[in-house]
Length: 140
Image (tube, rainbow, N blue to C red; front, side, top):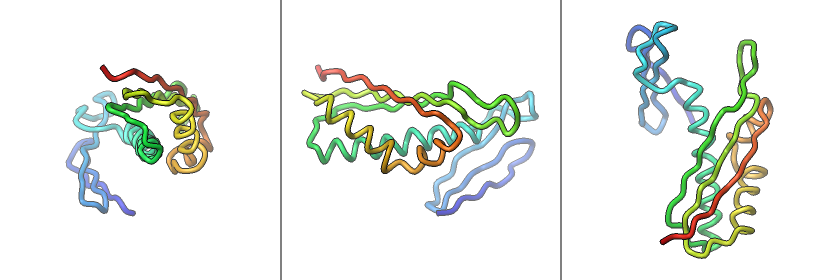
């Protein structure tokens, strides 16, 4: 796995992953940016949400749960007051829609992601308390 960023001028960069995908990086005008891309720490949060989302849906599919829609929301609740201002508290909310979803199966899938599979959670847990919750909606 590898990544690089290329400077585009001012505080604008393009990030490229080894897979070949690119993502715009920028920052706020108060620090010389143009609000023209993701903040780097936003990408860390997207990575966390994506990592656990993929784990959980994979586990639920293996459990033959009928998920018809699914979102994972990650939100930083607290950061350290001093630089490097690491995340110290994060909330992850899983929102499921499906047919007859089994709450214990959903809880088990989330637990397995948190405790065993999600590398992003394992890394961030060294500096941040990560709380999670979920809701289940019956598909109409």
